[in-house]
Image 1 (cartoon, rainbow, N blue to C red):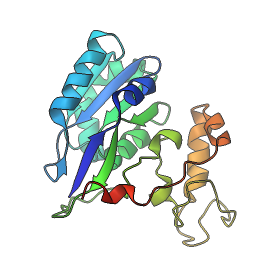
Image 2 (image 1 turned 180 degrees about the vertical axis):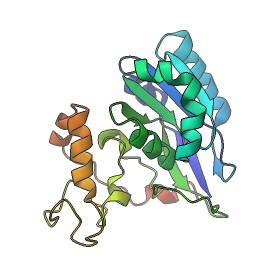
Image 3 (image 1 turned 90 degrees about the vertical axis):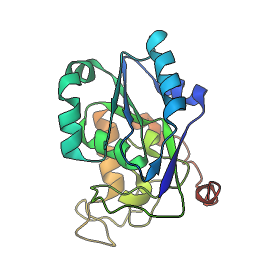
Length: 205
């Protein structure tokens, strides 16, 4: 199991840049999600104009379901500059992969919780590290997309765009670079990497 916790309110509001659409996932029962807290904040964002649309759906982690659920909301998504996703890290990565030209940001951090994890097959992994890096890496997790879980950039061992540890695996940091380049956010890579706090994913257990 896992638990999603909202980032601090000020931090979430600072992420909403330009026209922002909110995608809120309330599907997986194996994931604790702060529904009432999220709904209250999302309503505030609608009232004050921080968000142009709040889309409440389920199973954002499923590509097929995401496509189906967002069909009637595409006019808002297409008009947005930013998608602020209230879900676990897997859902954020799924949305980011679907909307490559959109800045997709996480409103939550994900923590592990002892117990049943579920058996739903997923395209992406979330390490449940409690300090989501997705907002500075274009919606691609450096911890699970990189064989070495590097958070400060490419190791230098990649060849032909593939990982030196697993030659069948695309280098996660090359993917991150290309995504940030497409979003014109390469300046995000100029700043020092956030040092990973390995104790963070045990604080909620």
